Image (cartoon, rainbow, N blue to C red; front, side, top):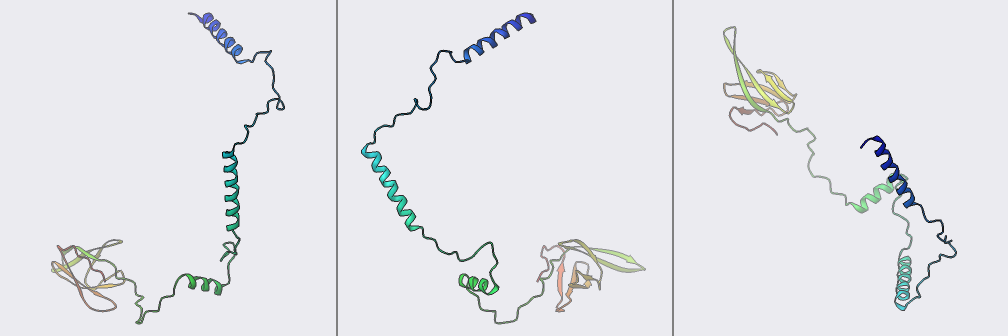
Length: 181
């Protein structure tokens, strides 16, 4: 086939589709007045259903009485009203008998390793400590995180002293225990 036969077949297809889609010229046109659907006569079952629906709607409307809401989400209430409303909902617990410890918890510290170096003929040790922020290298006398002071570094252990209490704590290599409290 060449391009002329393609054009002829395409034209014939378009013409056939157009002729098939147009309505016949002699078809009667119905207006809205003449095309009213006929309602089926009411039976006892359909009227009974309508009566039941009306009764249920009336009952629902009667139960739904308006009541002033307890709070207005678009307006701030005075402080005393808010406190009273909260106390009505949540009971206020009694204050604790003893003093409350407000000190922050001690940071977690674990011993990862110990490095030894000879400086001026003497042995100097450095503790490799793991904390939440990363790895710290500390020597004797250094402060760690503002909470501990390194008291002593041995070949397989480190002794840390909390700055507040002074009770020494010992971390050893080979254990997965971390220092916290």
